[in-house]
Length: 194
Image (cartoon, rainbow, N blue to C red):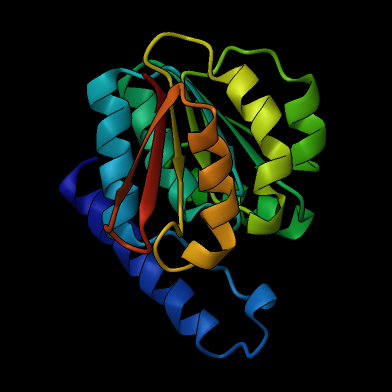
């Protein structure tokens, strides 16, 4: 991502934060990924040359901007899922603003329904959605992560550890996955096959 685009995206993030600060109900907020987490994830996608990306939880597209930029650099494609049509429209608007729509397929639907029928083609999945559903997503997530060196990254592993601890324990019990929590931003959980 060039320096000017990064600065403009970070300015956009500040407007999202300001808007969130005026909303009392947490569910009405954008709840965007922290910029340092977004940049780290983008760097990982680029360095690992991931080409088939899935994002679960688009919101207004802040993290999607970083993933789309990474997908462009790897000649990859990004599928991003959001259940709220208004948020999908906002994400589309932001991607168009930064000329990052071309590698992205935006879908407005229930993540569980998508995961149950998706083909196992993804080498990278970013999960940042309603945490209470994560354990029900796991059977399909692990089915989708079949390519060599595939990676799942999950946000809020530190800030909402109590809400993701059952999910982490479920993964670790299988004994075939490496898990690591990085404290960057709200905490990122990394999951890959041993």
